[in-house]
Amino acid sequence: MHKLVVPFLSVLGLLTSAAFAGVNVSAPSNGTTVQSPVHYSATAGGTSCSKGVASMGIYTEPGVLAYTTNGTTLSTDLSLSPGTYNTTVEQWDYCGGASTTPITITVKNSSSTGVYVTSPSNNSTVGSPVHFAATATTSCSKGVASMGIYTAPYQKAYTVSGASLSTDLTLSDGTYDTTVEEWDNCGGASSTPVTITVSGGSTKGSTFSSLQNSKGWTGYGELPPIYDICSSCGSGVTWSMSQNVTSPSMDNKSAKFNIGGTKAYADVLWNNHLIGDNSSQGLPDSNHTLVPTLHNFTYDVYFYGTSLSLSENLEFDVAQFVDDKGFMFGTQCQIVNGSVWGIWDPLNSRWVSTSAPCKPASNSWNHVIIKVQRTSSDQLLYQSITLNGVTTTLNKTYSPFSAPGWWGVVVNFQLDGNYKQSAYSVYLDEFNFTYY
Image 1 (cartoon, rainbow, N blue to C red):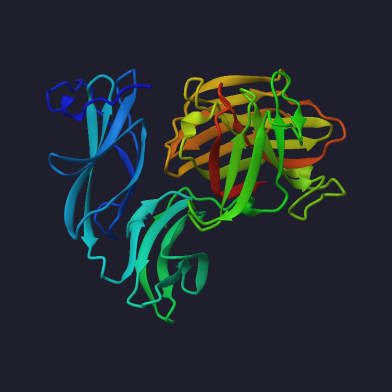
Image 2 (image 1 turned 90 degrees about the vertical axis):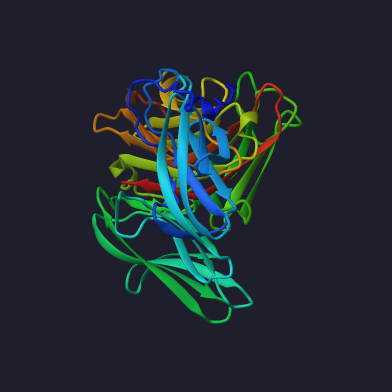
């Protein structure tokens, strides 16, 4: 593991001569009023250093470094007293360079009531899906019951229990007078209006939402060296899954996936048959008319782990079976093997490492969006992978494998064991799957 680059190197004049792009800060938005603790989320911008970005940090004022973390992503909560702060989010690279993004915020007294929206900013232009993040307080002694988002008057698009909200909404292009509202347990309510302009949005396709809490999940062990699945694998590999987990969770409905055992490098695969044979979503496609029309798939999920370094790989898969062909779109975050994404070549049964970085942060929610396509010529096209707001375009094409008699669309999630088969857990939340 690389050591943290000491932030004061930039003060010593070791900046490279090339210009740097600023840090990409998704929360809080500049100029917003927030409550403590303040949630910060950011990804590193560009750097001319060939070795990449080493670490990131937050200054709450000049010379006061409040937080640092290794890697190219940052997600943390800072406890701040009421007042206005000219904060700065900074990145440091392995060549001694640095770049920053200033974020001015006003922290309200915790006794204040109302809705505090940290994302998106009022009167901002955003892309779709739009990330909404907010907290609420109330004078009601029983507390806040729930929160929600209106995309227009009387058009409630999202609700969640509790006094915090964090979700993504897919919106078409246009201007929206949205409202984030809280409802307390005394019958009261308060709201904050947020006007946004969406550019580049799309509502194309159908979406299965909150799949982490859907029925239909089945787990299997996979023991080396063959890795054939087993439903009862002895002590070599053990696993469990729990749904409707309230903490950690973004919406009080996460799912917890556990792996353990005694056999090094053993894996656990969970799958869910969404469409076609054994559909968990009521779409058996018995007449074989739906599945052939589907070509585009988006696997969109948040994941969280306290010790992600114990994982060999985290795997997120989409599979389509049509006309006796198998289109297995396998993608794995190679925690150990290069900290990059690997993609599956199904015809040759092999993993291919890409240049797309995969360095998820432990103890915070990581957001991955994987876009794939079955082309008109029946090839597998890996289009792009987005992790924590950073998109890598792949455009890699592979051939399907022979799968006579199989029919449908399946999603998988897999945990891979390391050389010690260390036990660890990963939580999934807001798992949405779009198809068309």
